[in-house]
Each structure stands twice: as structure tokens, then as C-alpha cells.
Amino acid sequence: MLVVRGDLFIRDNDKFYIVGSGSNQFYKLVAMVMGPYKMMAWIIDKGNYNLENLEVFDKTMGVELVINSDKVSLFKKINIIRKAVKNADCLNFKLPLPHSIIGCLWAILYNKKYVVESGGDLLKSLWYHEGLSYKLIALPMNLIVILEHRLAKHIIYVSKNFLQEIYPSKARQLGCSDAVIYITPESVLAKRIDKITNKRGVFSLGLIGATQASYRGHDTLIKAASLLKNRGYDIKVSFLGGGTADDKRRKCAEKCNMSDRIEFCGRIKHSEVLSWIDNIDVLVMPTLVESLGRAVIEAMSRGCPVIGTYETALREQIGADCLVHARNVQEIASAIERIIKHKDYALMCARENYYRAMKYSSDLTYKFRKEFYDEFYDLENIR
Image (cartoon, rainbow, N blue to C red; front, top):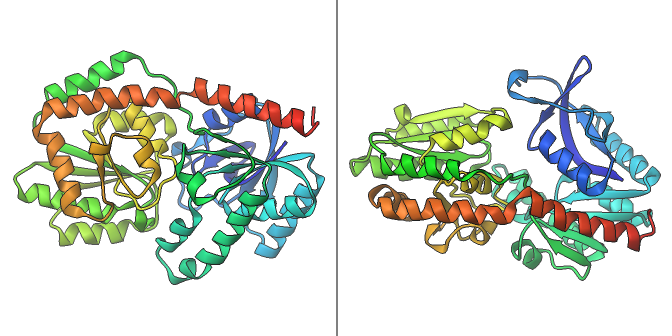
């Protein structure tokens, strides 16, 4: 099995540092599900990355990296992917990632055996991205992804119904998260309950997402927090995730008189994310685009109250009373205020989220995905 997703790495001597959303936990789970596999790996420059905050790729997981330079031209990259697809026995693509879109087209052309994992709404992702060029390619690229879904024979959607409605297919299919969530002990919930019960002083709001992704709603949360500050609440906002638009977010904070209340945490190791979640009071995700809220599920597993949006797949994950409209600042501020003012409600959210997260446990993910891939291998006579 060759996985073509566009995973990025930084090479430092004999070590490969994982860049982006990948992790050893995720790669290991994939290997357990699919068996040992090869993965196309694209090497980027170190740039401004702090290697101490990146995870070193574990070479003992049964995953072989097929090394390529990410600095080549688009034409060369397309040809590299073409050759890799042509020589592979079977493949895995994660649509709508760019490398997967290219690879899937070659797989169709070469009549290859493959599994599509559907993980996002491309049209919204491009349309709400800053920059006219993204909007210009949104529709034609999305039409290609629609076609690839319709021609696929085996699809795993990361949503329950959300993506199935956007990219319908008659393929053999499964709706199952690919998040790596381990069941946390109830002592974690007990600590959250104690935190809520004894809460005093500064109330901390968190958001996870790259700062240049304006659709994530950083500015919206800053404005909502400003409203709460004006109502007399002691509010702090913490942003987790790298990005190239910290200065834009700082300008928004300055306009809202929130400069001293905003914290940019940048990228941190995945192992440190849970500690960050434990230190905030509410995870607020006023995003316009989300097909699988991994950050939301992780926060839920820690008993953290979460506010999400109607417009996204988060409506499949959290209670309806915790949903807001993505750009309605007043509505978001009111939802946060309800959690601040009413501890009984916050405690209910904590308990409900903790137990809801169990539906996304890695044990269940492994079980359903393993059955799907075993059937794929049997149907396609690969084993």
C-alpha cells in the first residue's frame, strides 16, 4: 500500500521531523489498520521551525518513507506522483489534499486499486481562504474532487453524514473518524469538574488553528472576548497553532483593546496539546470550515466545554445548545457567558463532552477501519 497525502518532513541528519497535522500516533494506527505501508514524504527547509517543538518520526512503526524534495516545480511533482502511482499495487488517498487529488487522477487513469479517505470540504476551504487566487480555483478543483468521489469504489468518510452530503458516492463506504483519541481515565473528568467548581479570576478561552486561516475565526473570537470584557468579565484568549498572520490578529486585538489579553502559543508538541487544553476553560471554534474537529474531540475527551458552529461537521460532535453561527459575535459571546455564569451548565457540558468523546476512541476507530481495509484487500484480491 502506498499512501499519497503530501505529508511534510524536515530532515536533520538521519532524523525526520513531522510537520503539520501528522503524528507518530496517527501513523502507527494507520499501520495497524492497513498493515505495513509506504508513504510519500516531502522534505521542506527548516525555515523558522523550532525542531524542539516537532515530533521525530519513529522508524520502527512499519511505515517506510518514500523521500522526495518539496522544492521541485509543480510539473516535476506531478510526474513524481505519476510514477509512484503507476508502480504501486494499491493506494490510499486523502481527499481533498492536493497531492491526493493529483494521485487519484493518475490512479483512475492507470486503473489502480485504491481507497479514498474523504476528509474535507474543498470548496469552502478555498472560498473562505484569504486571497483571490484561491477563490478562482475553488469551483474547478471542487468539481474534480466530486468526480473522484463518484468514481471511487471504496471510500471512508471522516464524518457521520456531513461529507457524505457534499460528496455523495455509490461506493462501498464507511463513516468513521481518523482521529487518534485514547480513552482518558475518569480522574481527568474529575479534575475538570474541580476546575469548574472552584473557578475564580481570569477566564481563559482557547482556539486551535493556523492564524493565516481566516475562516477559523480568530478575529471573531477576539471581538466576542472584547464584548465580554466590556460586560465586566476578566477574559484571556489563547491561540494554539502556527501561522503567518499573527500580526493581522494582533491588529484586530489592538482595535478591540484586547492586546494585553491575547496569547499566541504557536506550534507545540502533540504531547503538550492536552496540557494546553487542561489549562483553558472553554475551547471556542467559530470556524466556517470543519469536517472533523480533532481538536474538538481531544478537548471533549478532557471534559472541556466546547463551542462550535452550525455550518460545519461540529454539529455532529457537540450538543446543539453549544452551537453558534460562525460570524455572529453577539451569539458567540452569549454562549461563552452562559458557561461562565452558570456553573451547573458548565459542569453538564464537561460531563456530556467527556462521554461523547468515547465514540471516537482509537479502539473503535481501529475496529471499524480494520474491517473495512480487510474487506478491501479481499474484494480486490490483493492478499
